Image (cartoon, rainbow, N blue to C red; front, side):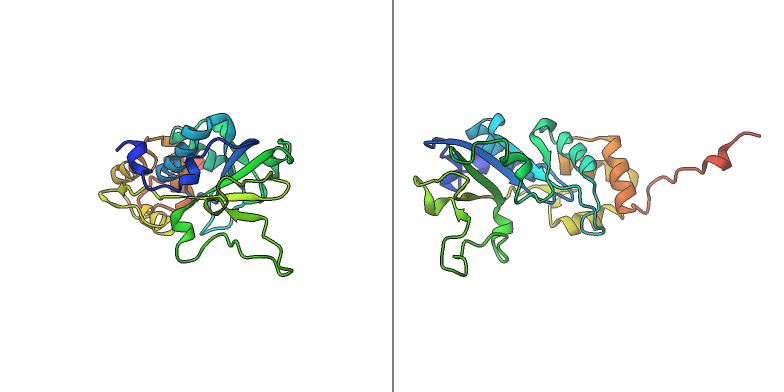
Length: 231
């Protein structure tokens, strides 16, 4: 399936690359794990804005079981999908990525955040309601402000991108929680196929990360060093 077909129902604002000011586009998230569905969202922005204006922001916070992966581990998974690792930035608060935004002139740059449609459906990750004093919130809906973008010292804009539907082991990819639980029960051969389906490529290194962090029950057990020592 071509990227154009995947995103034919995307927010029109996603494709509005021309702004009076410069633009920086940030795809922020926990990504436990990042996968090719996330890559499709990022690629859609790169296609329009150019790779030099697009970043992935994620933290290094580890809090099992929901957040088992370190930043370096996530970076390996992101790289496995084919994304240039230089576009990935470790941010203490991914949805307030000062590590990225501070490098831009806040008075001449428009900031746009990507968020998957699934994260804005039943329990929206972002709210655009006014502040308690009645003034507009900092984050604004990009579609509602099309053609009137202000620089990031005043507002940032949220673009809702459609979620790519894909299959893992022949079944529709589900939530990250369910994917992590599913992997823990796989044998070696099926685990390799799972990784290929999830990331679009296979890596023994990523397999070891998933085995270690998700406790795959059928993973090979590393022999104890002392037991293997020759006498």
